[in-house]
Image 1 (tube, rainbow, N blue to C red):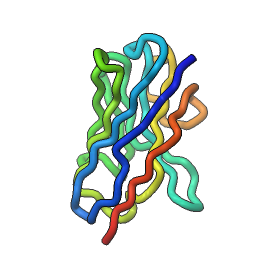
Image 2 (cartoon, rainbow, N blue to C red):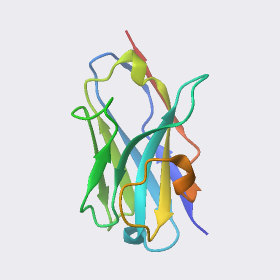
Image 3 (tube, rainbow, N blue to C red):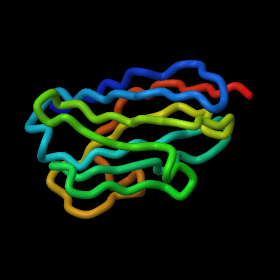
Length: 125
């Protein structure tokens, strides 16, 4: 059984930074493509960033490219989302997700098998 736990959400002022963490409990972490999604009130869940099992590729939505960076530490079974230059429109619940042994970028929620419980990020203006 795979279990994901996110942490790092907080209230931050516009222009600030946060780093989210996602720990995977279960099978070999390096076999999972990891993704970060977010969902604001009244909106659909949207893709933010993704990273392959060994970090060979990363993918970002246009709205965060250049400001956010996804990374992973396979020894610790943790994926990270470094968020810089935060804007009020980045306010949302952020979720990490995992899919086992799938190659290539995965940007749609239904392409992932496992989800964390979410962590709230609030950016004040």
